[in-house]
Length: 355
Image (cartoon, rainbow, N blue to C red; front, side):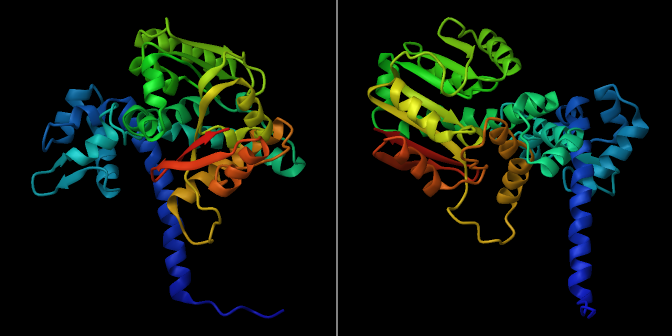
């Protein structure tokens, strides 16, 4: 057996990269604590602040707060003023960590990896058996974390950017049409459309009863329950209301038979209607080079997206990095003739589909 020659510099660099990833995982716990304890909100706009002052503001024990602040400073999540022994949450950091309405607010998203760890034994079983694992079989933190990860991005982009990028859709929504939000999850996208277009009626559908219950609560809280409704239904079994717009928000790739879902959308689409397909951003071919967004999505796809699609029969397991060409082929097989990229973000492809 030959012994490989070790490049010490490459080994050292890779070890530090792996340690950096472990540190990031530890840091995620710190972010969640900072959010849930109100530490970031107490720091926002306060300028330089000591551990004792932050402890008093947040109602926490000073010794723990001091250690947490040092962890945050070491990770670059707060600024440290060593001479005065104070710490500061910069305006840019506050948008990510303290402002729950910011499009880049991130703390709740840490519930997703927490659920992935909690469900590790289930995932081990899927690898060993090839069986699927449905959305509802995961720890509940997954559902909340995914909804939170997408909610603020949808809020920032859906009504002001994505819908206007679709030909003639805003005018139809303003006049009043029926909208289907397939795979609606906690209903944030449906609620946003209901708020923006009171003449339209938005109907959200999802196979996960717990998410539908949460979606109904969100609609009631937003004051749109009169025009935004939710039902437990599959992507090939929701009621036909001749929809002027059928939406798939970051969910088509999770389905066991995406072609069948697209075919059903064609059947329930009103004449001249549009399908809005929002999918995770991905090139048509992964080049194998380090990519943070691809790493995020491929990891989630391994444990969540592919597993759910397989649990539904897995006729076509797209995964969360399907890319535009494969998605186009799904809708071509379903009989659609118009397919174009209407917009994009670092995290999403926004695709317009018509018959």
